[in-house]
Length: 478
Image (cartoon, rainbow, N blue to C red):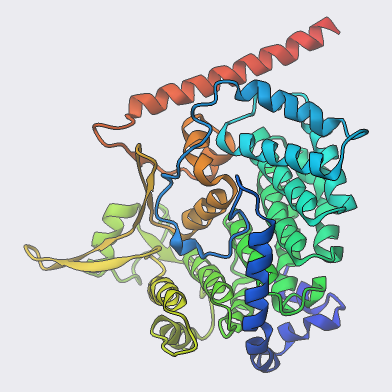
């Protein structure tokens, strides 16, 4: 795995000098996330959102996610396949289209792809749709058309499960991040790049390449892509770096440098930048531990009651493999300050988010065996400690247990993309969703049963079989 820090320092960009000097970065960082910048970026994000996709570029922190019980406006639309087909034809026929017409067609496509699992309907048109979406992004005639085009590419990558998407879109997406004049388009392109990298067939080399690109943005406070001091761009880069990092196993050689860069962002004045950076730090500490294997020597490992009880409920015993960072006490002190921060300049809402998020992050740094929202309590009968982890409600059907940071980051990334359509994609067997979250669902007796879920999986399997048969029938006809 390449040295991420070295790639940042040796990139030749004068804008990356923050990554080379921690003190210089600490002095510059508070100014890098000005309140005015935060306010302007929020307003821009809201103005560009459409009715169906309000909030897909939201600057809300991931810790705000508690359930997936959003109302699905498409549940009573029996003709959605026909509508989708019409919209696809409209998108592909640009000769007589107007900007407004393309925006409306893209908006409708995003709505339908979000609330329905469209893998079968997209068969045979993925490449053509990508070309049409890319034209909307490349020309950037309007900010709204460009962001909706990026949104459509993102949803296509999650729905189509096509391994060619990354190769086809990566040059345009990275160029858009660098060259677009709109911070909103840059932000949308960063999120789209993350989705295409994970779901579009990038492979490990592609993932590492994009992580280095994103880390450069973070280390330079957005200057490397002409977005200096833009909190939304920096936040998007931090979040997508963490999302990509969940798919890389070995971080021993890069953990130290990456944590240092994210620590610099903890002094930002934008709470979204701070929380996103803190979550990446927690993920990197979590990665320094891995499940015990048969040939591991555990003679030097402590096994106190608290850890024993916690691990008994969350999986195999976890062993430390390397030091995530050389000065954990210094980091813990900084995290503790954020977990208890007070001040009139911070809103009550932001203060609550900081306290909740950094209490959880600090707990993981103190003991990487503990995942998001880990809390300890004492069993009064045995006087032993036990832990509790975060659970997320999925509609009316069940609960997902999030006991590791990698699961949390994947869940929040999918939640940002699919929003209220997440349960539909999950229960209809969307491979991108199911393979990202190998998490068991606990179904209530009166709700969606495990048998129902198996039926949904079987239905999805049958759909894939029909798709395969149709493809080979076409080949035989030729």
